[in-house]
Length: 302
Image (cartoon, rainbow, N blue to C red; front, side):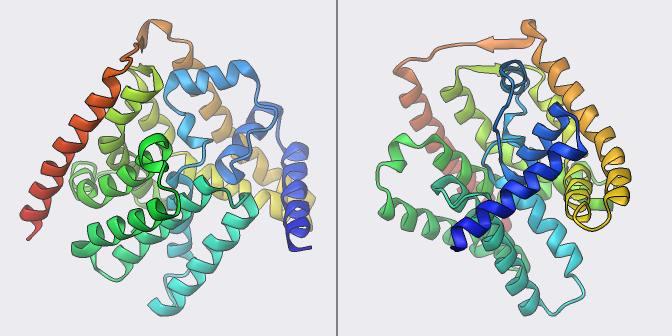
């Protein structure tokens, strides 16, 4: 009964999106809010892949991270214990709502691990927490260590955030903190810094303009998520106000879709390659190098 109830809620939310937004913008909002990719046109899907922006509509820690940032802002006036409890319950509820599959659960766990580490000021022990979480998940599903690329990307993204966000935060201190724009921008670059090599080895193509595309789109995602969420919830009670909010959200979503099509259609900027069996050795070499990088940063922090 609970599962049916949650599926009905999800279906109703998607119906509200269809009523409020044009097709492409609605599909994009589905992706960034509920990880729904139903009815995604083939051309739009191809352009997402070509532009390096697929992670915005894929099951990843980015959506969870953005959600945690907003909830942290909303509950900032509460005592830390109550704040952590409410954010944990919210993430658990969101995970069940979008579908409690393995990738979603992993993204939620990583998002919460990152939040706990920062909330309690335990960044020095964050690597131990991450490794403990990885060990538990590998025990539950041993083959994921070898064959699940999303498993690698999830953990690398979190490690990248833990060890490089301070660097990117200093480099981009001039960005506004309103609506967590700076945080979202910094976290995206920090996660890409460690995950990009693995993406290159496994996905067979990469856009030379992917970093630029992410920079141009990332700052709009928190705003689009917030306005989109407000509009589809208000539609139940105040359709007219929801329509007005959806119009302002459409401006950001239209901009994002335009960026996806623009960068996705730059064929000359897409490098396609096939490492074959070498990708396994290159990935192992990268992980070995990564261990020394992490040890270096750990020593520098101490």
